Length: 164
Ligand SMILES: CC(C)(COP(=O)(O)OP(=O)(O)OC[C@H]1O[C@@H](n2cnc3c(N)ncnc32)[C@H](O)[C@@H]1OP(=O)(O)O)[C@@H](O)C(=O)NCCC(=O)NCCS
Image 1 (cartoon, helix red, strand yellow):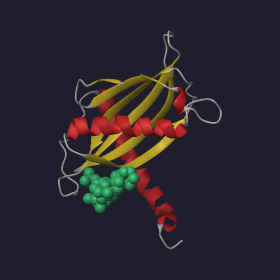
Image 2 (cartoon, protein in one colour):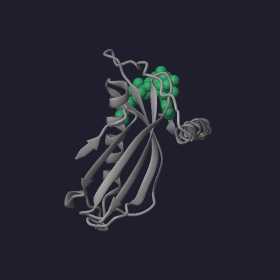
Image 3 (cartoon, protein in one colour):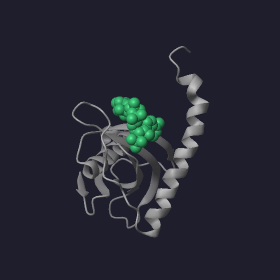
Image 4 (tube, helix red, strand yellow):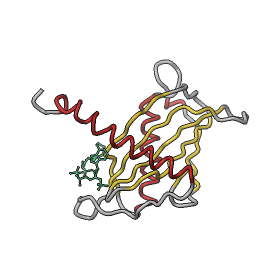
């Protein structure tokens, strides 16, 4: 796996999907893609906060296209919003056959990490200040998703309870 890390608010991973990543249909297993998303998000969160981080939320994963075994996989993780201790990161997954020019987009999702201090308590992170038009649009997207998530959390509350 390789990664580029300039500037500090995003990270890119590129690697080949392996025969051991396979699902029952011969393509890359969805669970493996979720693991890669978590790893890319984690690397981006650590790079930003310079402290240990945990995943607190993953949302909106939609697999648009399958990833084939032996293809080049590219994950781009980008900081789009920070709260006090939380970091909202957009992760896009692309792949292509080796030797081809164009990557195909396979998946997009938002993953939220929380920075933790040495006592395992949420810790303040540096504020991400969007500057470009694209960064401002992505920040607004993160804020809208947070609002929508409150509604989803309400809807899911009865099913999250231990007593069901
Ligand atoms: C992350 C964790 C410490 C947060 O604990 P908590 O009691 O909810 O702490 P807080 O209420 O202070 O929330 C901390 C941050 O998480 C955010 N958060 C909590 N639930 C969230 C959710 N569903 N979606 C997005 N962010 C969420 C809060 O908004 C807060 O962000 P802010 O500091 O930027 O305002 C706790 O939930 C935990 O340990 N979870 C398990 C993490 C883990 O093990 N992950 C691995 C995968 S299982």
